[in-house]
Amino acid sequence: QVEVEESGGELVSAGGSLRLSCTASGLNFHDTSMGWFRQAPGKEREAVACSPWSGGAKYYASSVKGRFTISRDYSKNTLYLQMNSLKPEDTARYYCATDPIITTADGLGAVNCQSASGFWGQGTQVTVSP
Image (cartoon, rainbow, N blue to C red):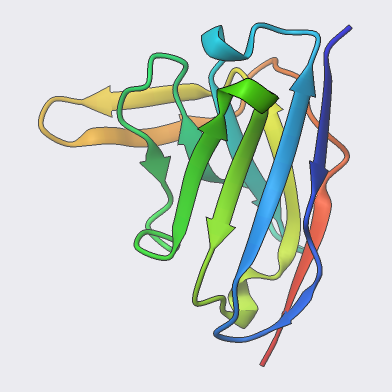
């Protein structure tokens, strides 16, 4: 049984940093693409950052490039999202999901990431105060 659990969300002031964690079990973490998604009230869910199982190009939403970093600890089956220079518009519930579809383009790297029929956690709330 696959389980995905996020943690690390909290209230932080603008300009601050947070690191989210996602622990996955019941799957082969080395062979599974993983992604972070977020959804703010009244908005559609969007991909924030995605990590392909192959170790290839990672995807970042344009709104977080240069501020957020996705990484993995294979020894702990854990996915991380380091978030720096947080802005109020980063306020959302953040979800970890398995098996996102990551699209790459020659010379451009990963250009898109979409959720698919993977497994999702319950999410962790990130609130950034002005």
